[in-house]
Image (cartoon, rainbow, N blue to C red; front, side, top):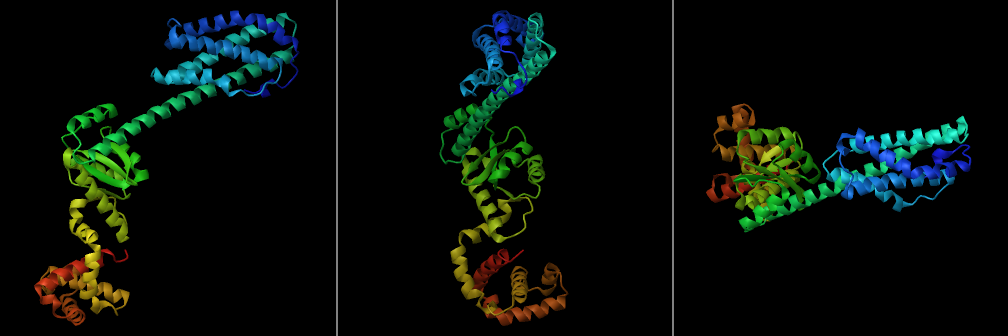
Length: 392
């Protein structure tokens, strides 16, 4: 607390005149607060009453000290007002009542201080300086209580977040006993659903995504990513809600199932998100792991498919990037449609004659492996990986 609000001519004698009034003034302020602030219309007893009385008494004494002369800021003196802010939060109230009490206290104090100062013969300049100082001083006390309230909010939010993280870690740990999950869920204020799916997203996106999905959603940072647990994820409204909530932000959802298999859902969701990111594809919002199982197989066996590609796609090495991409897409369409030129043309959005011409070109590049069953299997894996990793 500083004395900056007391710049001006304040005679030394003002403090001596005000000092005898402090006990009665303190009682008057407490009584008026109890009469005019509905939430405080109760006996000022216990921790609450002690806090209010200490706050009023210390506020008046500190103000009188400022009148007597400059003081050095003392963090210890702020504890009472920070504690009052904390108590309001713990009582489940907003700061409106406490701030109203501060304003009422300032008005009562000013009326009495003005009466005493006038009776003592102090002039208008002194009164104006004291008035300005009182209300600036109350603003500072109020700011300290706001800080205490915010600290209490932050502590509760941090504890809430910690409990939900512990819950999610237990859900993702195979074999966690049911009674342990039930206890953790109760502590976290979450009802265990019969089924759920895990959603993987960027860590910073998880809190926003959870808020948009509803009150029954829990989220935490897991393995550097955001993990959101989505109950009853197979419900149509859930999937639509996820698509709306994610927008164009990257996210992947694993399969829905019993909570005992949520770790599998998380592994697939995480792998899908990482596979989409590694492909360089432009994010289209939420994707399903079930729609990318073939791609996940290629990603998980990337070193094997790389070795296959060296052999099966060697004939594409000297092609330009444009020609290589065209050949990859044509060859994959050939394998998927068993060499049927009209079907390939529809898939590639080209004329059938163009498809037949391209078939000739891919045979020149890839040879007879297009017709050997084992080779076709390996070739399709190599082509799918190559297509997956093409620049978007």
